[in-house]
Image: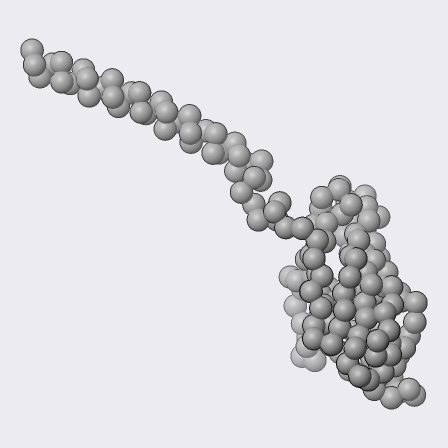
Length: 165
């Protein structure tokens, strides 16, 4: 009879811990499906500028428009400045410029050293995107180094992570 009691004891042990492990697995599965373990839920809003540039106050509206304050302090003037925004998943062409980019409007087409401009980029995320929808991408600047020339220089000036608010 000693072996029978040991077997019963072992079975009770396995059943008790088996149920506990099953409950933990179900709870973890539910938390995972709710996105608790996804890194994007932990990310806040950030705008990291390249050296010589400034990026502040990014806001992404429910209409899909991104507004951000951009400045530069490179010591030179950027003429015919045109800003673009691209997603991090967008590829680049042979010139190093993104294959799909959203043009932005700015308060000035010239960006002097020490100057800041507010830019506004439409279509970054679909309009009526729910609050909390995130966007990760880059801000690009096309410009000319001379006042009469076309915008021939392309440069990535900031990396941005922002959520619809």
